[in-house]
Length: 420
Image (cartoon, rainbow, N blue to C red; front, side, top):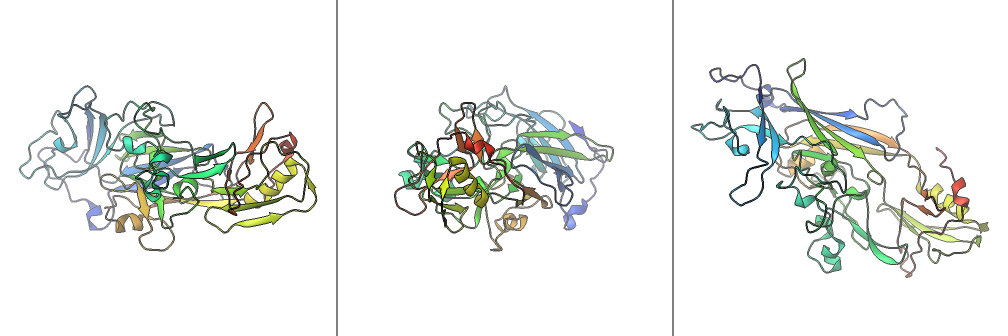
């Protein structure tokens, strides 16, 4: 444990300045850093960094319960707490878990400390066993909802309350496919307990990260979108660490979110009709339809003869280009919401919406805007087979034909994204 210099058993703690309206935590986005005007990022392969700096911290307590057993028989956890406020000047952290030592007091007024709970964890990614989340309240909620659990498929979970969206596609035959980035397991039975996915982060449960794009949105299997609601991206944080004391006597929690494929990409639906694997190219006067996110369906009729590569270039020219994503984050008291609703109806998801939902904000809102140019749509594998990796094949005109991934003949290797 490390305790702030102003704290002792016999000296009263001065009133914290944030009680008058400021917040106990200063939240900032530390990565991708200060981007110059016009800077462009790929849609994956970089990190979002968050720094939660305590303005007037009182203590830092490590809680070690891994080899203990709770009254219910569950194994314990290892975690830390950053103490922010103690109104009665009597530190009692017994309510944070099993605590030994000088902070396990029995205070006359009971435990009243304000603290942030977190766990040091440097390896969060899909499919990697996370042994520090075996007893977390948030752990099981990070498992992906199975498509069979959705109401539209006979289950009990409404699509606008699920932590994963599925849509009906037809690339290698009709099937329900998940949208967005690769996340956690299907369920707790026989799945890797990786504690990684949309929702409340198991290592830093007070963090809220909002970016209303791609898999953060709610879309049902029939492409029906739920407006005014987005998923908390904090469950995608890949690592949590801490800075005990810096040269200004400040303590900070640091979190890093690795941006992976399809995490910040828009959902692009394409209907190729009868065009699918086995189509013989060139073809004459092809037609296709596309839809970006919940926008209107656009139908394109081409004239002339087209190779597969030329057709993919026509699709790419219409669905790709620069786009901006605004990412906002706040810290709340206790566990954050898994979903955020647009409570004020302004079309954005902000800290104000979180507060209006009944959560107490412990930080300012941190915000960053990134400008992105997607990488090539096509994914050329070693055997020469090509499939546009960003496209979601769907029946947009209700004719029973979805089209699907095309059988590449090598010509699409020459496609290049032209900045515009």
